[in-house]
Image 1 (cartoon, rainbow, N blue to C red):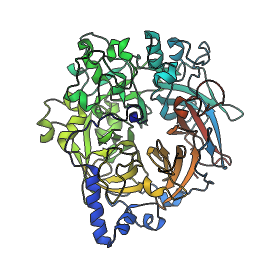
Image 2: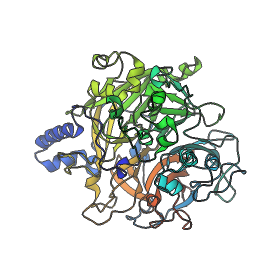
Image 3: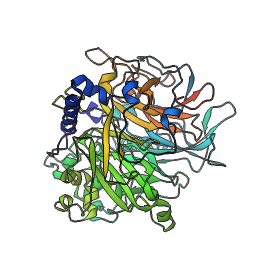
Image 4: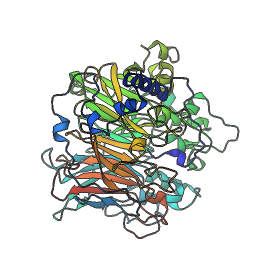
Length: 623
């Protein structure tokens, strides 16, 4: 989720296909709206939801409506909003409380030492909460499904630089590399609310770390493929750069591997990336972790580990209640830089997964299981192993097409000869299919009325302005929404723009770089940010990243929470009653203790941590 170009701003775009850019499509559609409305202003107004007058009448017109609920009746927002925040701690609405739990280094068992800086050993970090808190979900425990006081929190640990993790620009030995590796991955943490209302870590066999070195297995079309094999014969291990997430109807957690390419590199001066390696962003230094110097798995030029590059970039399924079961990489969902995986149940009980590939000019994907998910599980089949992967094409007239990524599609079959190739090189298959390049598609979420939302965080490489977003480049991002035909399982959709962040600067809810996203069962939309916030340049410094709550039916948006300076606000999880919400403060101060010492105001460096939000009156979060 965190923009890797904050590390290497001169990194080239990896999508060199000539597929029609999304801004061209958007410009064409805006042009049609401008002609129909008579002015450019009316064209923009028709797209923006920030105005209650337009929001109340405009809707995406594809597919049948879900009659289970009416968001406009339930999605009220009653809390007192906060202003833009520029401080070194956190700011929250006066109607809420916020408490910090599980900062980086929190021990998961009683025989593991408390956190210290730098970490005392790789072994200690392997049993401590990781760094780079990101996507997560809460799985209730102990009694009825509605248990709101006891559960397992599955949480991603996206990244932590060498300087932040062990206070050195480059690793000096294998131990430091393993410390860094053990700070990445995921945590499964058993939590319980005590009599005082505070959440505490529970000593439990279910609590565990899943790191780059944890054994994993593959399933689906690429399982057993030569593309995933190494001459070295090492077993599949690990998950890496875990960004956003998803959760399944059968109670498992989905963690998504994003910028994994940045951990590979080589000292071989003659190595150059081939076409497929270049399309996924591999180069000789990555993000300057230099793991390859002490771990040959991450040397891109080592022929004994040629398949290691293909072992990352997947959606990984974890059963939080079964620590004895290996995490499974579900290859049917494709190998890209996955931001998240939002699941829903479509027509016929089929599971549908919406996914963004978080890179400039990359794509939005959808997976549809081949049958009713309950029937598949009863037959011993995973619904995530058998189905169809699609990629989105956005058309000028507001319609869209889901393009099949399989050998049934002649454009794909002209490039690939087997499904293991298609899913392993899903980006290239999407290039061939003619997908629409987007502006960093990140989190997706599915609303109660079947609208699907996706954050497009920004695109610093856009070169042409357009009526919908007149800034070139596009530094502030926007949110798109669509509705699929046939209750999520159709191959067409209708799309529209939900909001352009650049148009919010002079409002009370101004924000930029939308990233995290969640639609609650009442219809509220929770928006988290990662990047430049108002006031936008030429102001010297923007506000801190934030969490906002929107009512799509009325256009109302209020700011609920802001984090410390130079952090990212990310990750959303709730208890079943939605009266407790967990969010994450990632990379506070970008690891610089001179900017903030969140969360405790002491020590040498700030620490990523989870924040618990609750209404003071015990009400539903967001209300």
